[in-house]
Length: 304
Image 1: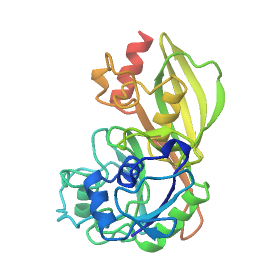
Image 2: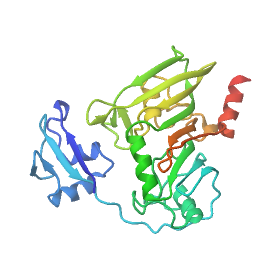
Image 3: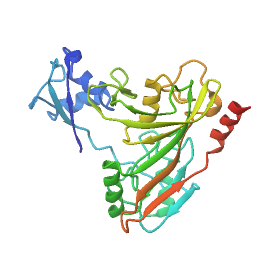
Image 4: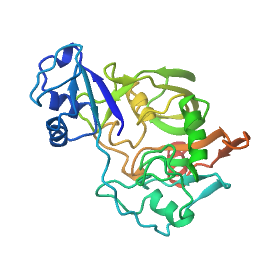
């Protein structure tokens, strides 16, 4: 179990402990209440009741429960593999494919496909639910993803991600016309204060997040951009661009609620470039993909 530490600020004064944790994590309120009742949640080092009212500066510590193991079946799903050796492979994930199983969605994922393709040759560091998965991209984001075949490779790749020496570049189409051709977004990201399923730019219980942006082309009402991640927070690109008032086209979570671009079936965001040091022999591995069909078709409608 991984320990999570949260700190209440002045805006949290008087909020119940169970509501605060639920609002600032991915756990349901009922599950949070069950955890609190076991005595494994502390406020300033002491176990308290779920109805405890928080004060500014309170330090809340708890551990997320391990997910119940799912029966994951290998599935013969075609994989678009762009690089492979004995230690790792790079997959070009299609839009619409979930990376790893979760309750209620335990088949047709990338992991199901990897189990069929690799058999037992996947790292186990991330547990039975995420074998081989070093990093991930959203269901409706397409593009390159590295998969570790053993724990040695997994540790080496994870360390590069931690040290920000692992280069990931995306292309996206966003709403509106960006003022600058090149700029950096440096805004912290944390759990949305009112919707625990979303992320947001927030200065409470957040982590630093840095995205470098470069304009590729401008169209009427949209801009085609390249984004380089310096950090890799959940939904980072989507949250940063929405915060600037230029959400990713087709993003039904962070984009405009009215008149979504239904033909995109999700955000127009593609992880097209990845570069890293091979954990075993220190070679620089660089993989780049073409834009997928859905992305190119949308660009064509903007050009015409």
